[in-house]
Image (tube, rainbow, N blue to C red; front, side, top):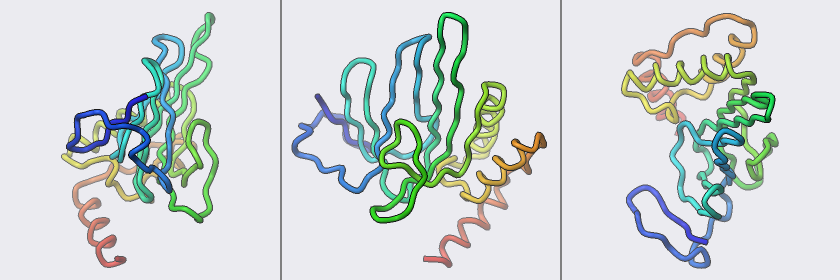
Length: 173
């Protein structure tokens, strides 16, 4: 079992020498064309490789990440989900989510591949502005979730809106 720390560290480190206590753990699985769980965006604090098809990514409290789950059977797709989650600090309340331990604050939850694809395109549009999707205002992800569930198009996230969020976040510190 090896552990890789990110960012900036590329060499494997012994698992026993690290402590991931207090972090949110996300189990990722990749069995091509069968089960594919991956992180679309987010700044992981570390990664533990379990085997060729499984690994665990760790997130610091307050980190925002997108977790995509897709699974198929002999008859086609059986699961398509995208969750945008904020990792929680120890002792805080949280919502449970499969393969996320202990859980997190779910900012957006979408099911069904057509809707998941729309959110992925939305994330691409935000990143095309030069904005890291993990730094987007959490309220905006809630806005996207509500409007998509209502079958409407959410407001676009703009550089101006992002700058306003960054100023609000600085004031709140």
